[in-house]
Structures are given as structure tokens and as C-alpha cells.
Image 1 (cartoon, one colour):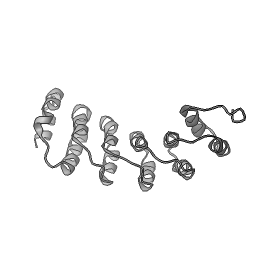
Image 2 (tube, helix red, strand yellow; image 1 turned 135 degrees about the vertical axis):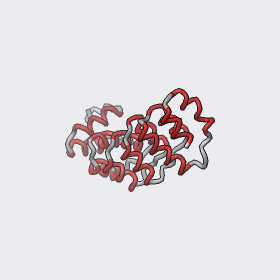
Image 3 (cartoon, helix red, strand yellow; image 1 turned 120 degrees about the vertical axis):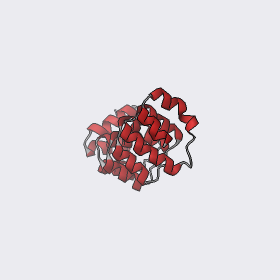
Image 4 (cartoon, rainbow, N blue to C red; image 1 turned 180 degrees about the horizontal axis):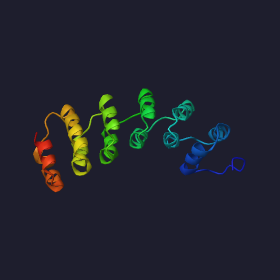
Length: 169
């Protein structure tokens, strides 16, 4: 493939990172432009060493990498990404609120990732009560006052008295 100068797509690069040994990865990296998508294979493998290898090859982060790592629950990778300055924002909360990954929520709070009202709406709709309670406290810490009227329909549609209590508290 390399000798014939055949192009590869991002799925090929993902598979090369995921399945190949270091020697073959070097061959791929030396002959193809490595893109941020390659970090996703390293994250799936839970390999900080492989993330570092990709980083050392000059591949910069995009805004999809941190949420992907958070969603997969790879805390050693979260720490590494954070230490390297990988961008993150409130979008990181989206999938973990639905899945109930409290450790990830705690980590995002610890690094100062500011949630927003849209993420609170997701939590009202999908989170278990303990996650909603915990997340609501975080949102209140960052958002000066929550307009309960903005959340009325979400709370009503959930139809759970505990949710009403948490949001109105």
C-alpha cells in the first residue's frame, strides 16, 4: 500500500494504531499524515504511552478527543490529556450524564470544566437521581442562579417528585 502510494482514510489509520505493533505504526506514521482521530484508537486501548507517541509525532488535539476519553471512562488518559492541554468544554458532560459516570463528572468539576444549562437539561431527562443531585450542585456552583422556569418542561416531562425537589431546592 505504501509503495503504491495508496491513500488511507481515518478508519484505516484507527485500525493501524489499534492493531499494529510499534514497528508497523512507525511505518504508517512515516508515510501518512496522522490526524487527531488516531488518539481515539489510543484511548480505546487505554494507552497513555500510545497517546504520548502520537503527540510526540506532532499530532495536535481537537475538541472531540477529550469528550471521547471521558465517555470511555479512561481516567489515566483524562489526566494525561489534561496535562497536555487538550481542549475540553461543557460538551464533555453530555454522554457521561446519560451513562452515570460519577468519576468523570467529579474529574471535570475538579479541572474547572464549566457545565451549562443545556447539560442540566440532559441530566434532568436521563440521569439517575444521585447523578442529577450531584450535577445540579456543580451547575449551581458555576451558574449564578438557575431560572427554574427555563427547566419547567424538562422537569414536568420527567414526572419524578425527587427531580422537582432537586431543581426547586
